[in-house]
Image 1 (spheres, one colour):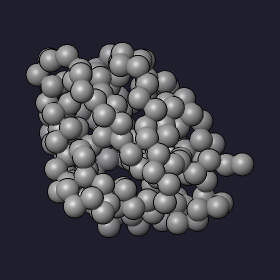
Image 2: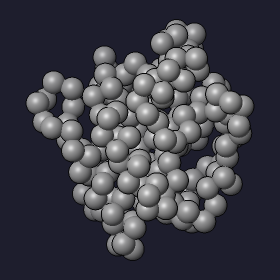
Image 3: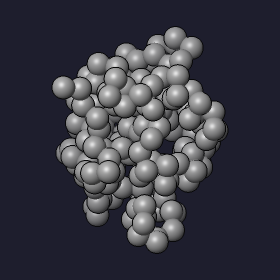
Image 4: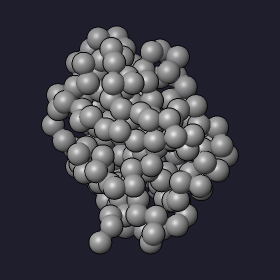
Length: 183
């Protein structure tokens, strides 16, 4: 497990359009989330960093959705070399963890590249105009550091967005497994 930090793209960056399918062949694009904030996360099924936070992450998405923020997750890993991240196993992972948001497969890895996603988990919170409001860690808990998973950094950003505050100044990078890029 190689610890990789998120790239921390510039606040205010406009979200890139995408077209990805879920397991039921429903197509999602940025247009599906018009006029509402969007919380986008790059995750996968097998990463210990994702597994470490997944329960709290699902709770945070429930809070976000209850407050009008659309949520989605994207898996961009190379499934040829990491078959545990296959679309079939994504369905099981989503069901096991009670996902209440689309979990999309980025087979060509174009979306991860467009968003400069670097690790799993990697989090991006956009305002209703699809301008980046927050990117960074969920909280300071990591596998093995004995800190409780609270989601505090991400939750604070969500609340700041909802109450019309400016982007948090002290954004720290997310840390996780590197995205498994194709050769």
